[in-house]
Amino acid sequence: MMAGKKLKYGENNMQISKEGLSLIKKFEGCELKAYHCAAGVPTIGYGSTHGVSMDMEITQEEADELLMEDVAKFEEAVTRAVKVPLSQNQYDAIVSWTFNLGPSNLSSSTMLRVLNEGEYDEVPSQIRRWNKAGGRVLEGLIRRRDAEALLFEGKEWHEV
Image (cartoon, rainbow, N blue to C red; front, side):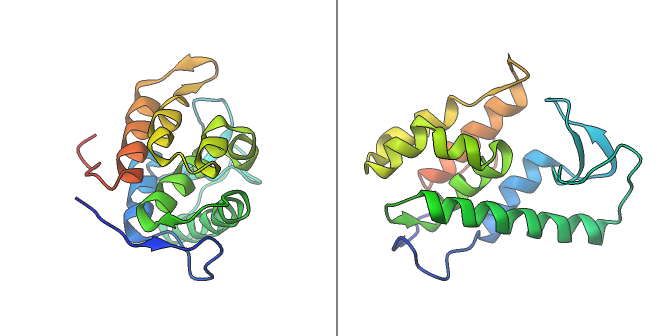
């Protein structure tokens, strides 16, 4: 069990943990040459899409730097959107979800509404609903959402 103390909303030091980064890295994988993701978007590194063209190639160090730049944007989006206290595991799970789906999906989601209403027990099922890309349910997204839901609950997710 991965227990975590509750952090207050707006605490300045809320950042993704190594556990959260591990989940993102596991499910994004790292590609040093640009490719089209399942949704058809040019992507590189650990799922970076901003300014990517299909002729790009990067180093592992550049992929790691891009990951941290991207994560910082999604941490900011989560901090702005979430109005209730989160544990580190909950925060990590929501940042991972937002990393994959984007801030606009976060802000318009039932998952965020349920979370901000303090219905923490409902959040894992809301996380799991987001398992499609290009209109199709994907096995990889089912596994990622399961891992994020388990992490949110403070449970072991590595075997998903």
